[in-house]
Image (cartoon, rainbow, N blue to C red):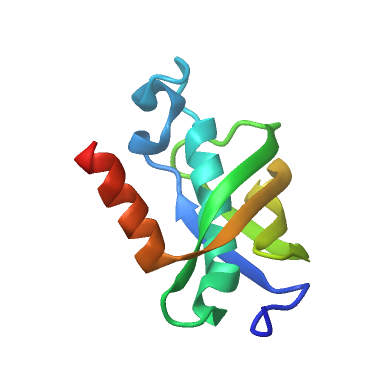
Length: 131
């Protein structure tokens, strides 16, 4: 993992739209940022931190999440997800992830991603599809 180092960080920003709400996704009945969308932003930020540093043919996939969604974000407000690489254990990368809106932190936790060989991963998928 010579291309990776502790402290690498990635960040993504989105405006919360109706399609991002708990009510729209069926994960609640309110017009606020849905937890599944918050988690997707956390993962996207982790990908942004490291995948571009990996050798050709390698990428990361999510393998674990331990997060809390602690505050609501209404439609129209921006949210920013930030992921920082805090540990490298072989092929498993650990990130501290935080999501904030323009007023406060709305979620935080730990996210782990595993480095995969894309071709081998695709072969495994094809075998599953073949039955």
